[in-house]
Image 1: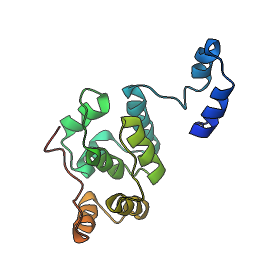
Image 2 (image 1 turned 90 degrees about the vertical axis):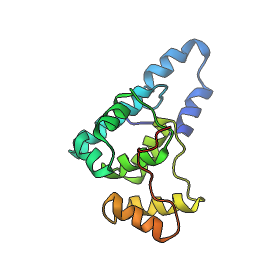
Image 3 (image 1 turned 135 degrees about the vertical axis):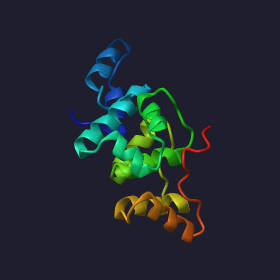
Length: 153
């Protein structure tokens, strides 16, 4: 089933009564999320679709494998958006897939009015190379590079 936009869901909710809310959830399970499993399943589905292993993604993202596996299993959480961005970039997520992954993880999506976020949106679109290349471009413009998982919050 195709995922519905927020606007589409709001239209359906305008015509939904409390007694029918369970039916709404059942019919829109692909569009409504409320737990970490949605993030985990989203990542696993995209990794499979893109034909990339978790191990390869963690290596490309320059994230310790154990830490990466714990993040994607839900055993650990991070408040560092850069860690999730590293994983998304390393897995070749599109801009839309990355924005959705950030939302599913409970983080703010990249915002075009924030200069660093705007550059990251372009970098995710143009794919200039590895994470090191992305960080070089960010640094060359006086912006902080994508942080590693070294300092975990």
